[in-house]
Image (tube, rainbow, N blue to C red; front, side):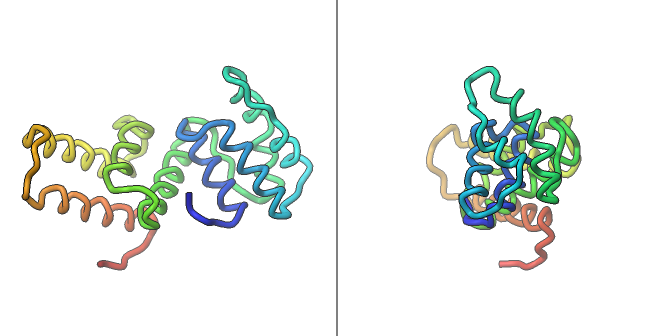
Length: 170
């Protein structure tokens, strides 16, 4: 996990929750971290106090998250929204660029949580995930010395930089 300000962390977790990539327990933990860091609002306290039993966890978060984020001047992304998908892609791209995940982790995440039916912003990452699958299939799990995988990694890193608006190069 990236070391980020508690508000930024709560925003990131909320965006990931909106696409189903984080859990209600993650949202509650981020709210607790905010309180521990001195960020305090009435609805954030309620959010931090939610018990997250299986099956009902999203109902309670759904009820309080939007208000807690509004009190903190953060953005609420409704579940399944295009804006939530785009922000979640940026969150994951930042994680890649910070070294918290690998390029294949990012592409497989995009394939799973954004899909071809989601925002066009994720299309290149999903195509690159398919390219990783192709390279692995061609080599059938055997070691290979080609630079195909390294080239794909570079393409994923370039796409992550584009997503976060970082135009620097290696």
